[in-house]
Length: 227
Image (cartoon, rainbow, N blue to C red):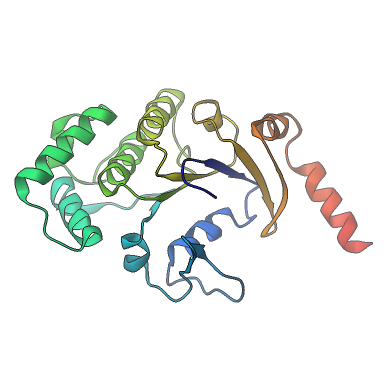
């Protein structure tokens, strides 16, 4: 993947999509048994999550967790300071936060709420987009951001994603369905089945999958494996 590109990974349940996202980010619950994770020409294989984040990786969760007692503004300030490796002056941080909230059309009261505590599905995903906006990653991985969203919430989140895209950031969208890709347009679509990329193409591949599903691909793979 290159900066400025949008790639989508699609596949059936249990194909390894979320596993891929967690391994890329260095989730310690997962162990790499082979291969490499190369980012800007550097191996990330032995780096912990926080160091990967400082180098410009970002992961938006499929199921963001609530952190009662921690406000969004304090959470974001600590995250920005950690990624930048230095204390950001409060005035500069507030100006940045309010500018990003305006871009994403997020109400200012959002900043005073506890992280994901009592949030609707759409609010949780907007909180993830606000984190991405503040951290300004070089590579963002969105793990099934469309999961659990109604059509209005999906459109709002997608508009936020599009507003944050820029030539300096690459975007990897992980999704089951083509509906998110109606709003966030990928240049490349990859199909992941049983932990392997089995087919790649342009946006027309997502449209094809919306019609045919994954059954034919899975059957063809099973037939070739048993041949």
